[in-house]
Image (cartoon, rainbow, N blue to C red; front, side):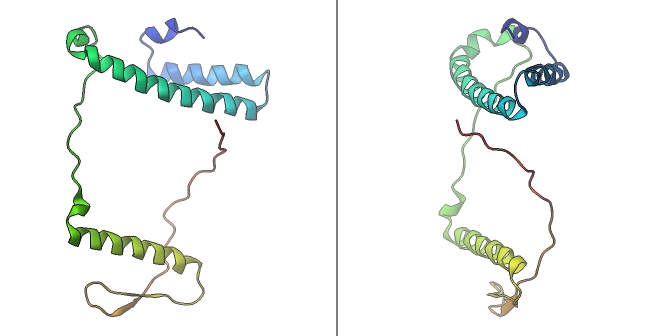
Length: 142
């Protein structure tokens, strides 16, 4: 695969088809696990490549942006430290505690109780329904 391919205007669909074709061709010669290892390393490489290329591109953006109408620059903004407000932090910490209790209640046979922040009364922790499942994945150490 040559870099010139990526200089052309490929659509997302074309890139996806090219990725599928590449992995199918590669799997003719190696195992699916070896293909996965290659793909994960390529993903890691691509991520680093993007970060470095973006650093360089930001330095020339103002001079060259007109030549790249398919690109736009989004300026970052301030991120507020909401936990600096102590009352909000206490509530956030309490919510984390409730989340942990809900996870424990799911596994526990005996009922669990927490103190209701509003009333101060003990409240039984319910067994909440399962919302979704995480997908299975194979991790590759790089």
